[in-house]
Length: 113
Image (tube, rainbow, N blue to C red):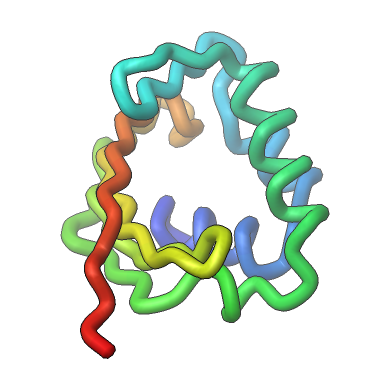
């Protein structure tokens, strides 16, 4: 399973055991110019996923833009509070294949009615 497939599996199956095993001890997330530690990230993901009943209603149009053993680029739409947002991210893996660095940005998508 490549890193993108692993990320999708974790999100859609709420596989917190795999998530904790996959995220490196020295992991850092940069989200909208704010830096988060491994513990902050894990707590944020777990809390967020636990509050979602049907994942496919929240995450959709997921797309792997590029993936290899060292890097993953992805895009997805997220529905939050009746608004739609595009999340674009880049993740780097360490030499053990664990998620090591992640940068994401989020932008509101204007939905045509």
